[in-house]
Length: 352
View: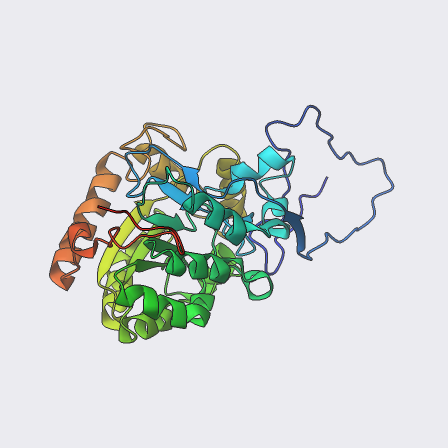
């Protein structure tokens, strides 16, 4: 059978079975071949969430709780480490992940209920740890904005990670949160090359739009940083210093980076993407990834999964540290948020 061709505006044309599927079907050529175009439309399903705050104990993350108002992501980034999570909903981590989305329509109400719990202890919540809170469907559903409104009323600190310029729509809320030292925004910047962005992150904001978001947030007084993630050997790693410089020029105050991660179904999807778009260098890219992951395409060990190991990974880390020192990026300790102002609106204050 002829493999599906890359689709304009989508990260992948492939829709492999998820790892939990009890059976698999395979297309075979019976001599009656017909061209049937794949559906490219986006379908959004509504979900009523029971809880909205997800907890983690990962030593690799600077937060222990997060909120994801959406499952799946229309940005279609081929490298997205969240793709395997779609298998839990009997959907494919491939094309389904970017076309069959789930919106947690009651996210704000559930968050308010959880924050009002007498046993809740305040600590910064990350918005967008798994999928982007400002992906295109946020324009219609406005779940991220409603979550920010709740967090502001409760005086609860929040960090945001996004590659969507739609974050500027909520500038009014972010300015107020920043005034109270309750917010920090990290803009994901992967490349300055529009051509690479179109095939790597087809429905994400353009590089210049992300730099503009950094600039506007900075000028409005909202603490903003850049995260160069993922760094992909022989694809975008040569841009690292340029990305950091461009972000610093736009007003970014802090910086971070991550090496490409290819857990579970992401590995074969990314490998196919390489052969589709960069066939001449595909084997070299995969070789460098394996050299950084102990001979495999992925190493999920804490302490290694974000940075990798080996010569290439060590060189990348040295380059990042040197550039960060030269550009004067602030350390994490200088960006601490205020947890002391947290209060349940309307609740009786303590007597002592």
